[in-house]
Length: 218
Image (cartoon, rainbow, N blue to C red):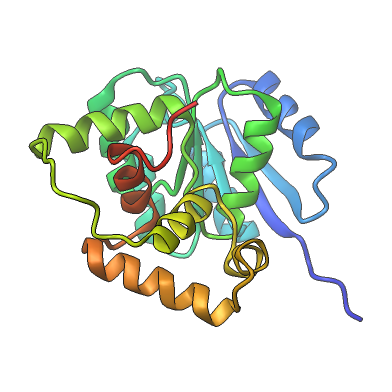
């Protein structure tokens, strides 16, 4: 049986110690491989062109080294590249703009080793991953656009179970095993849930679950 090739990662951070720390954290993850590092935007684009990585881990909030605008540029040039931001940016509007520019997942630099590992695994799968601080920013934005409602949830008890597992990062096969269903049934539930709620992405589903008490921030 042929082994699966690891997904390749490029690190972009102005601080050497941060890059070294990420290398150490990810060294044991056989499903990923760090293939390059960049300390400036110039190095970033050189490495992206030369290495064509599957994923980019970047701190865009570094004056004279990386800027917020680089996220939009990278996303436009490499639309299949999966981007994980790990930054100490505390400006809520800045964070929201970066998310709109194409960042798939977002952590702060106060996150621990396990959260970094989980975020990388989710991002290489193409799933979104936000730490609790970023979820709070997203939730605040969402609540500012909606009014409180006492309407009952349109979801069935089974669909709520599926939502809880989806937002925790489980894939359809795992959910099927947990709920004693077929993967096809899980896919059908997910499709129906997104249609009922008129949602377009896993991030929107996470926000719905937070707003309606289906899951809680930790």
